[in-house]
Length: 229
Length: 394
Ligand SMILES: Nc1ncnc2c1ncn2[C@@H]1O[C@H](COP(=O)(O)OP(=O)(O)OP(=O)(O)O)[C@@H](O)[C@H]1O
Ligand SMILES: [Mg+2]
Image (cartoon, rainbow over all chains, first blue to last red; front, side, top):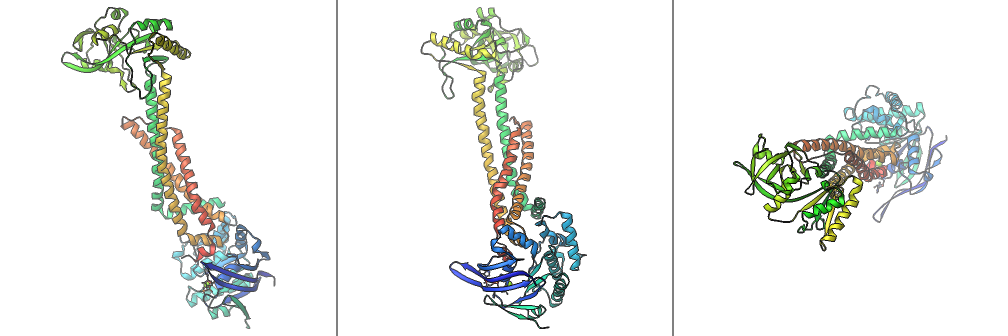
């Protein structure tokens, strides 16, 4: 397996008026392409921080992160934005959809920053919405969609750029268990059929159990277990 | 393509807050409209005054005693009627020289009485000031030489005293002395705020006796052509100063009056524009303020856009376009309102207002610039937001 993401000795410190919080204290891990990993750990252990760094949204205080083999330390902010656009898909716990915008335009939005024309953007967005089972909801605004549908739109938005890695921070945290299960099935399918590497942040043991690898975060350090199934 | 998208997003954001956008725009609308209106009024005043000065007649040199300066009191005149001949000699044609002595007096005809400016003048006045008659004839050389009691009425005075009747051959009394009306002058309008149609012209000799004076107030010379004005003016001035030692004389031309008045009124227009510009600036501050609010409100949107690959510049441009859109739409509305109000002022009030293309262009340019200048700070703030922090914001 080639490495999609490679973290070596990563730390992340937050300085708050003389007080230093060390959210990550030397994390080394690799996410291979087509991988399926869960990041688990108690609240405040540094899961979200790790995910932001893995996705190139945040930069480590020290250590090396390679996305698709490229060291992010060498990238300018705009270059890093481009790397995010091309290789990473983010799914957030609170969806983060644009309220005044239709499902279709929400999904098409990342393609704006790839410089695609409007017609092409909408064609691809429609395709992905169909893939997540929302082909009949393209014109709806987020407020006209159920929570589960909103999360599917968010997943479609993460997929529209055909990323190598999908990073999901508590993707089922705001959903009931049935809807949550559907979302996880969808993610599993994507991983299996499209070969998208999945990294799911969760503190739900059941959610974590579906992944091939469990990465435990505790006090800013990681330990790893392989699911035997 | 990204610009087009940024434009679309900006329009959407402005329309989502229609009332707020409209109120923010209002500041710019008022500022731009004020610039256009005040410049129109300033320009109107300038053009009107210039027209009045030109109304005096072209190639005219006015010779008055004293130093012609704004703020200095006119000095007592030592000019005498004999100077007309002397100046006529310098000019080379006595018919090009007119002299006058003026005083305000009551004029009576029958039961009607009017206050009028009695101008004692030489018979050359009609030609020198290029005035015209609507009835009768003008003063003659012999009227002046023999001190006849004849009068030529200004159009307004004639109308007020005699109504529709033709006054030629009728009597008027000026300061209690009887005069025979021999002519009526055509409508002339006002020059420098003085209504020339209120004038009554009588022979200068008759006037000097009536006012019990030897003086004449001013000499007017009509130069043969524009090129001769400067030289002629100087020669007349030095000649008079030689003969009346210790007395200063001024020879002012229409161009000089125009120049002085023009620069004063031009300055006034600029001051008005600057005052209006301040309100435009205040409008710009309002835009900046609202843009900062908008950035704060949409922090999560900014974080999200950055997470999916927007660069600093993409975000910055989006907000900059929003600000510029606010001010340019406001600017266009302001120009429309400004032009409308200026035209209404011109039509409905005695104030002349002339809309100039440059005031509209300037106001529009300034409002675009205001959008850029006052949009840059919020746009930069938006572009530099840390996506992680932005996404955590609730
Ligand atoms: N911007 C910040 N400034 C200061 N401290 C921060 C900041 N972001 C996170 N932290 C701290 O870093 C630590 C890890 O936070 P993080 O959000 O990664 O935890 P988490 O594992 O995702 O928790 P949860 O399960 O509650 O989401 C916490 O102690 C948090 O207080
Ligand atoms: Mg978290």
